[in-house]
Image (tube, rainbow, N blue to C red):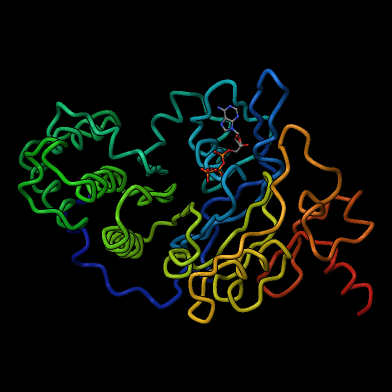
Length: 346
Ligand SMILES: Nc1ncnc2c1ncn2[C@@H]1O[C@H](COP(=O)(O)OP(=O)(O)OP(=O)(O)O)[C@@H](O)[C@H]1O
C-alpha cells in the first residue's frame, strides 16, 4: 500500500447504491472439490462448488453446520491442512488461478489481494506484540518498505478507519476488549487493501450489540475500499442486512444463489424455503421450527440430489440424478429438478 496521499476512509465519494451490479468478476470459483481423508473414508466436504464474486460485492454463504462453508474459505487461501486435500477446481482471482500457485506465491498474495478474517482470529493476535508492530510486521512480511514516520500515519488512519483510537497502536492484545481485538484483526486484514475479504463468522464470539457494530464497520470499509466480501455464517438476519447476494449451501454443494431480497421474498430451492420458514418472525415469535430430518453424512452422501431424503417435493428423478446449479430466473441460480419440470411445461 504505497498510496498514502489517499487517507483511508476520508476521501472516497459515497458509493452508488448497488455498485457491484454489472461490475466485473473479481473471483470466479469453478467446480471446487475438497475432501478430508479420515480413517472411515473420504469426507466430501466441498463437492463441485462454483460461484462468482463481483468487484465491490458482498456475497453471503449460509448453510447448516458442516455444509462446507469454512472449507471453501480455507481452500481459497490454500490453508487446508491434512487430512484435507483440494482435489480439483479453479479459483480465478482477476483471471489468475490461485489454487495452482506455489506456497511462496500464495504467501505473497494473502493479505495483499485476498484476506481472511475468522471467528478465532482475535485470539491469534500475538500476545507479546503491540498492535502497531503486528501491522508493520504484516507489511514487512510482504516486502513493503516501511518508513517509520509514514508507518505511524498509516497506522493511525487505519485504526481510525476501523473505529479504534490512535492509542490502541501502542497497546497489547490483552488490553483490548473482544470487539476491539476483532477491529484490530480487521485493520490488519485490510491494511494492504485486498480485493477480496473472506469473513468467516467474524463476529459470532461477540455479543449481539458489538456484533452489529462491527458488521456495520466492515460494511462501511468494504464499500470505501471497493473490496468484495464473502461473508460466511448461519445468521440469516445478519445476511439480510449485510450482503447483496446469497449462496445457500447444503452437504458440500451450493444449491441456490440469488440476490438477498429475492431469497427472503421468494426462495426457490426447497431447502432455502425451509430455512426461511424456520426463521422466527414477529408473528411466530419464539417458535423456531427446525428443518425435519438430518443432513446426510458426507462420507456416503445419498445418490441424486443430496437434499432428496428431506425434501417435501421429492420426485423419482431426485433420487438418481444430481441437479445442476443453473440459471432458472433472471439473476437466480438453483440446483433443483422442480424447475426443470417448469421448463418442460413452458
Ligand atoms: N480436519 C477435518 N477432518 C475431517 N473432517 C473434517 C475436517 N474439517 C472439516 N471436516 C468435515 O468437513 C465437512 C465440512 O466442514 P466445514 O467446517 O467446512 O463446514 P461449515 O459449513 O463451515 O460448518 P460450521 O458452520 O460448523 O463452521 C464437515 O462434515 C466436517 O466434519
